[in-house]
Structure formats: structure tokens, C-alpha cells
Length: 130
Image (cartoon, rainbow, N blue to C red; front, side, top):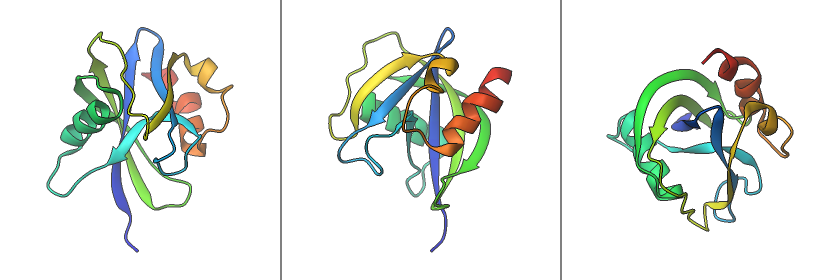
């Protein structure tokens, strides 16, 4: 099986990042993670980022920069990590995809469980340099 492409949205407000607890219809529900989703055929990474964020939490975003790449722990997905600027509106979560959403610091994220290994690595190694 070939590896699929996905985006991860690093939405910042000050020193905080929006993370979600994956909902009952999401792959691997219950995990805390930044917003993410598959890149559809013919879609750019920026388009996928904008679409996924709007579908999952109802925010409009402007992609800023690709900052990292990683793989999921099962190697099914190549993850393209992007920073993005989010509008100031309220988060309106899709209940199938998102069971909770929080704006957290990197330090707060590292105390949450369960989290994916690549997400932990991002918040420990990459995020402090952004």
C-alpha cells in the first residue's frame, strides 16, 4: 500500500496552538492532536489545510508556511505541517471529527494524553524554533 499525503494545521493565537481530541468518526479517536486531514486528489497542501480546518472547526484560515514533515506511527501517511493564521471567531467543532478543542501552549500539550509520537516530537523539537 502506498503512503497517503496529509496536512497538519498549526493554528496559532499568541503562544497557543489549537489542538483537538479526535472524535468518534475520526481515525484513532480519543487522541489529542493538531487539526489534520488527507490531501484530496488534485488539491494543493494549502487548499487541503483550508478545507480541513473549516470542515473540522468552522474557522477560516490563511496558510503561512510549511514548517516540517513527518510520518504517522503506522507509516500510512506522510504529514505536511503548516502554520496558518486563523480568524478570531469561535471554534465550532464537527462532533463526528472533534470531541473537544483547546488553545494550549506547547508545555500544556506535552502533558496531554494520549498523543501521537510525531506530535510530541513537533512540540518538543520544532515548535520552539518557530
